[in-house]
Structures are given as structure tokens and as C-alpha cells.
Length: 618
Image 1 (tube, helix red, strand yellow):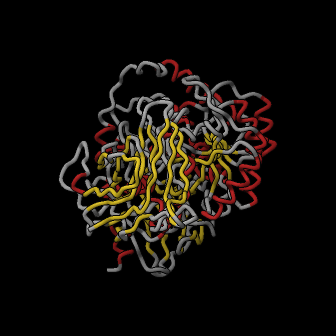
Image 2: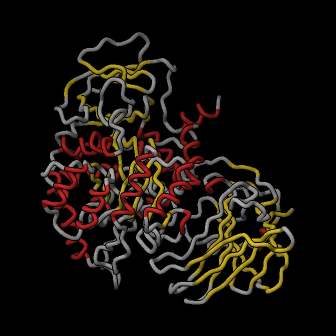
Image 3: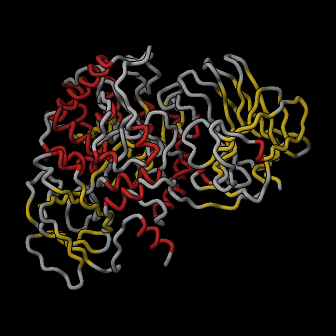
């Protein structure tokens, strides 16, 4: 059996002949426009909707799906997700393949992804296209923030979030980013931290406008992280396409409503991530799409007082009430609000949160069930400038569809009763997807034999000998440590890598130089034919070598200390010396993601490290 077909079958795709029509009849059809649901027949041929009408004849050889007692809707759209973030407390990473299945299992056919960096786009797109990681259509966003602004304090450095403060810096950064073909730009325009911590820097209107100008010239949309009334006015005037997160500091006023109408901006309020919650008893529609480690943590959530220094339950509810009230105000004023969640943030679970956002709109923001469905379909598609191809059920559009048991346009809770999802015409069975998510194994990923030489520092373009891009993570926080990494002459025409660190005020400040062994660290490296890692180095500091491997969801990476020396010398570290704090079994060397050199120190001190000839040895 061909590999692609096998993978698709394993993930629940019900494949027929390439030209076989699918006929969905007997269902109430809610077409996403806001019109009342009607008993219609929908014919799908290939990836497109072929016909919609009453009592259409069944084409010869068509597969007929009985929709009796069900409602057919356009596939749902989530305007704000973090596909590599687990929503469970205590998890630092997630199984992205299973997260993608969770969206399909709940009828979400398009998501906007905010946590991938540019090097990850191409390999992730390939894995989704070839069936290795089936999932919804993904709109990949590159991230911009201000120096010291929100998004820049993640600890991933400028590899994941580009820091800009003027139009000139925007134009320069865009020339670097556009070759990666992002689908969107996320601009962290607002540094307000909800009154919980001091506000960070915010983006000026000229810089936002430059991002919008360059992105639109390249045919790319702009989504902004904006959480204040003043920030919303700046983002509206600058012309961003979707303003994410809502207004949380003050009531929405007549001026912001006027600006939003004038500039045609859409909103994605992400109320589901701000809603105070303690899901001590998660519903079956959620637990059935959580993989075992996440489900275990989700069921361990206990109601508890807020830790010292964090907002109380009362203050969180007060903040949330402002967001919800402003969503109601803007909806009543006719501002288009789509469905966004910030899924991946604590207790904002992938797939399920998209449905819960609609329930919030109905239960707390004055929406009718029909209006909430339009928000998650037509209005979200309009915000992404994709309404010509998706968002409503019409002939010629992509056959992204959702079949649910019951009448969600009358009772929004029925949106959780997924019966079948269609992605570009291919039907997915939610029960089969759920079973795949609940398996104890991680999603299988391609594994590549890795060459011995990782990086001899002789490429002038900043890439390794494996053609991967080094990244420079730091400790997280607004006052994170800083590191400058550059190529320097070692001797003659030979080069080395120099990393110079300025440690910030964190309790345990550190910076890292990370060498992915595959593009973007998405697929896996097989180094089982080798017995260790060698490199030339010079430096007098505190150093460790870390090995990032697949499936490790906490800080327990394989690690070994590196002895410092002020003179150049060659270090050999056998794999057998790499230990994990929570180690079980012996590492087989077949799931390597990256090699990481860590430099640590004390606040306000400096350190440096020179590296050359990083390689595996037998």
C-alpha cells in the first residue's frame, strides 16, 4: 500500500475514487451567511462544492452520506492558535501532529498559527501536504514586536520574533522574512500587561503602518496583538486586517467604533483564553481529543488561590468582564468579530476552545447561536481575505464542511457534537481521529541520517553545514539576557563562532546557541551510527551541552557539563555521558532535534564562548 494512502487511512480519511462525488442529503444546511438553515442537498466533487440545492439528483457512483438529524455547516476557522504549545500546565511542548487532529475532530478546518518561526514553515507545510501530519489549513504568521515588547520576551530571540521600532527596520526585516512565504504577519502592537505586571513597550503607528504596507504589497494579511482602547485605535488607523484579543482596559467608545468601520478591520476577541476557568471536570468533547500526557494534567487541575504576585480570581473576572462587555458593544455596533482563541495558552485547549469561543459569544456577549456560527465561518474568512474560497457553503468553494448532530444554530451547545469533518472534500471520522490522539506514542515523524559534520563555521550566510539555521534562545522575561553571535577569524582564513552574552536579572540567567539537525528542527535526526559529539572551543565560563530530543515535554533534556578553558582545545562528549533528570531507558540516537550550547552566569555579568568544528564521531 502506498505510504501516503496508508497514513491517510490511519488518520481516518475515508478515501474513494478520485472522481467520486460525495452527496450529503437529509441535513439542515446552515450556509454561513446568516440565512436560516434549510433542508438542502450538497454535492462535493474533488476538493470543491459542486452543487447546492433542494432534491438534487444523485450522480452515478456517488457516495451518499445521510445527514438526517444533523446540520451541515462551513468548516470552522480559528483566528489565533499556538500549535506547538500545550494548554496543560507544566508542559513546555506538545505533540503538534495530535493537536492538528484535534482541530479536525472538532470541525475546525482553518487555523492561524502564531508559534512557528520562519524556518519551520516549509517542513511543516510539506508534512501536512503529504499526509504525515494531516490537519486543517494553516495560516503561518511571522511575528514582529518592539524591542522589549510583548512577544520579544519569549526567550526565543529574534529567530521567532523580529524586533522593530521604525519603518526602516520594518522594511529591512521584511526583505529577510518574505522569502519564507509567510501567510500573515503578527504584530505585537500593544505592551499593556493587564495591570498585572508593568506595561512593556508598544508599537508606534508609523511602524504598524509600515508592516501593513509591506505585507499588503506582498499579498499578506496583518494580525495584531492589541489589548487596549488606545492600541485598537492605532491598529485600526494603520489598517491591520484582524485585531486580536479585544479591548481589556477601558470601555469601547464611539471613536474606536468609527475607526473600525472606516478602515474595515475585523476582530478576534480570544475570550476563551481570558475567561477565568478551572476545568476540574472537563467535558467529553474535550477529553476525547487530548493525548494521554495532556489529559492527565487536565484532570489534575484543582481550584486554588492565586499564587503571590499573581492576579486574584476577582481581578481576573473584572478584567474578563471588560473584554466580554466590549465584545458585546462592538457586535451591537456592527463590527465584524471572528472566532479566535489563543489556543495553547493555559486551559485554552486546541480544537475545543474554538467551539467554546462561540458558546461564550452566545452566553455572555449577546449573540444569537446563528450569529456565533457566522462569526466562526463567514466573518473569520473575511478577516483572512479568504471569503472567495471558504467560509460559506456555495458552489465552487473549497469543500471544508462540518456535519454535527443537532441544531447548533438554535442551541449553540450542539456545536460540540461533531459527526464528520470534510477538509477539501475528504471526509474525516472524528472517532477515528480521537483514537489516534489517545495512542500513547508520539506522532511518527520522518527520521533522517545526519552527516558527521554539523558546523565548521565556514558558511558566511549563517547556516550550518547541515543547511539549518542556528537560533539563539535566552531566558524568558522582559529583562531577558542578551547574546550576540557572529562568525570571526580563528586563524588564517578559518573561522569560528563567537557568542558574547550579557546576563539579565533572572534568578538563573542563561543564553543558548542551538544547532537544529533538520530544517526548523521539525523532523528528526538519526545519529545512532555515532557514539558522541566533538567540537573545538575556547572560553572561561559555565557551559553545558544539551540534546533536544523528540517527545520531551519538560526541562529534562539530555545534558553534560563542559569544562572551560582559555585556550583552544577539542572536547569529546560520549552520548553515554549525556544524562536526563527524569531519564528512563537509554537514548537510541534516532530522535535528535538539535544540539544546544548553554552559557549561564549571574545577573549583570558577561560571558563568551568560541566554537568550531562541531561534529559527531564514531
